[in-house]
Each structure stands twice: as C-alpha cells, then as structure tokens.
Image 1 (cartoon, rainbow, N blue to C red):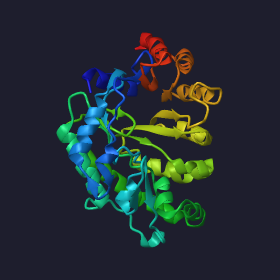
Image 2 (image 1 turned 180 degrees about the horizontal axis):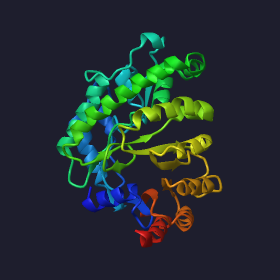
Image 3 (image 1 turned 120 degrees about the vertical axis):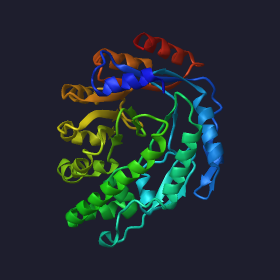
Length: 350
C-alpha cells in the first residue's frame, strides 16, 4: 500500500481527517481467475497458483481513494468466515462459494479449547500466508483470517439450538469457554501476525488496515439474543480482548443487530462501527440507517458506510461530511453508462 494511504488511514483512526474518505475501485478486466480451480478442498491445494492468481486478479482493478490491492485470506475463491472453528477442531466442507463446519462439541466440560499450531487447517492457513508473503508486491496488503467470535463459532461447533440452551442452562461454563476461546484467539492472531508483519507494517483485519493490532469484531449469533444477554456474553468477550487489540471496529451486520447499538456505543475501546445493511435490506442511505449513523457520529465513533449507487453516495456525503466517515463504493464497472456517472459524482470528493 502506498505510504499516503497508510497515513490517511492512520489519521482516520485518530480522527484527524477533515473530510470523508472514499473507498472505490474500477474494474479494468472482467475475466477473474477462479481460485477454486487450484484449491479444491483441504487435500488438493496448489498454493503457488492460488497466490499467483490472487495477484493477477488484484491487478485487474484500478484503486481509487483509500482503496488498495489486497491478498485476502480465503480458501480459494470461497468466503472463509469464522476460521477459528476449523483451528479448534471442526472438519470443513468445501462448497463452491463458501465453506461449512461440522459440529463436534457434545459436552463443553470435556472440550478443551486451545490453539494448536499443528492443526491441519492452521497449517493450511499458514502455508497460504507464507506464500502471500513470498509473492506480495509493493502497494499490496495481506489480510488476516476472519477468525470470528466466541458465540458464533460455538454455535457452529456445537449447534445453534444447543448453544441457545447452554447460555441459559450453563452460563458459567460458557463464560469459562469464552475465556479459553480468547486465549486461543490471541495465540492465533500472534501466530499469523508474526508471519506477515515481516512485509506489512501495522495490521490488516479482514476488513481494514490499522497502524496497530486490529480486528473487525462481530457476533452473528447476537441477532438471536437480547441486549441483556449481549452484555452478559458478548461484552464479556470484548472486555477480555480489548487490552490486546488496539484498533477495534465493530461489524454491525444488518437491522437485527441495531438493538445492540447503544451498548456498543457505550464501550470506549470500540473506535468505529461498520454499518452493513444486509442483503435485500434497506441501504445505509435509508430512513432505517440514517438515524443510527448520526447516533454513531454523535457518540464520537468513526463509521464505515456503503453506497451502491450515485444517489446513495450523494445522500451519504451530503448528510455525513465528517472526516470520521469512510464511504465504500466497492467495485464499479466503467462499461455501463450509469457506473460512469457514479464515478463522475464521486471524483470531486477524492
């Protein structure tokens, strides 16, 4: 990544910018290589071709604003969330677009949660990252795995219905397991950070670069629990990890998590909120989200927003001209006229 982008993002974290940051990239070529051809499952992987293809795909985009090329931590072209499940003992099923985990926890008291460097999937991630470090080019960032959070990982390791019963019937046992999970999580982060910090300064979560240890904390499972339980378990987890992480952004995933926003905004160590509207849900530039965004900014937090159209962008930039804002426009294809118009609207703010 260019030093200017590092500097701009560092200023954003420290709330020193005087205008919103724009994150947008332009598709120059459409024939992206499917990495799944070289990563069929956990036993059929050509790391050389995977990373070479990642680099080639990244070069088919033009990066504008704070956008920058990145080598993602994905197992092929698949989305790879909650990797701690695999690192802690789940078997993995490889699909076309994502992966699934096979649950294995029958009894929490007989399950010891710890990070094992020799685990098959840890080694798989290690081999990917080492190859990325070997081949990374100037201006690129290497992303950390999407490790996930305790409750969401537990729901995959144990089963959603079982975990919902567990947090009611044996809450103290679940808190003990959260303690173990955080120890394992920190061990995992340190393990991978040692690999790529040889080439990349600071730290890059699956979401965003920061000048120090960072992660986009999250809890998909939280949509199924009340704010009281959110405080009891999710905030409990955050309190355990806050002294290790220096730059925490919260991944607010969809309208069903709005009920927890006030609690999140009360936590001083959460520096930013990423507003993710959710597929098929109202966009950031909607009556649902605009009051929430205003609340986030009034509480002194940074915010990451998304605009898919020029109309959405115009609404967000007009209403939230703060330097604490990032507006991500994702990738646009310059061939349709409407996308050319979109870029024309964005360019004055770059």
